[in-house]
Image 1 (cartoon, rainbow, N blue to C red):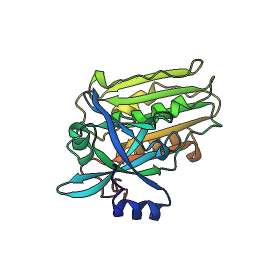
Image 2 (cartoon, rainbow, N blue to C red; image 1 turned 45 degrees about the vertical axis):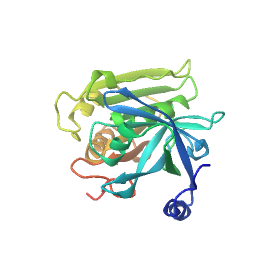
Image 3 (tube, rainbow, N blue to C red; image 1 turned 135 degrees about the vertical axis):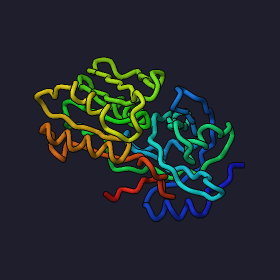
Image 4 (cartoon, one colour; image 1 turned 90 degrees about the vertical axis):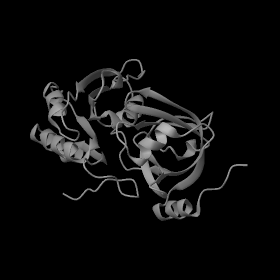
Length: 254
């Protein structure tokens, strides 16, 4: 019999006005040098809309903490949701992704997040590091053809440049930038990729998902190129030099 969620998870979900459940690891595998895939059964109702994430309870230094992960895909019929978790560091979530086994029960709180697809945009620009791929690809799969989407992604390894099967008729451009030894959290590589992209004349929306400092530098670059603040959605997944807080988010103070 499946255990109930921990009392702390129930209280957290109530405070956040969202839902809680227990997901059972249905499958787990490395899908690239920097990404691990986890499929959870029993919590597809917590996946929300494309762009949303869920909170997992994980153990860090002997105590429970929360980590937030964008949902990559959902199968309502099988009642599963899939996560892609970055493992190129030694954080609590990365350790979980590398070591969790099938059958493990995890508390899941969701859906979380306020960023979704701008359905009025004619084109969509997705900029981030490898940790953003799950969110970006789920967003792209929800675009109605003949929409357009451009990915500018910095990767540590060429094998991290995973590509999805997107709807027929969707205009897709992928720019994968090799980090090439640059320090994590710097924006130079993504700025070079952005410089290669000429904005179409119609209305677009940019999604910046990744490291706190780099994403804020890119936001300034997009504003300088004429994109309005309302046409930029930014979410910091992590911050170089510091671990995420117990609630799963990085320090966002400037």
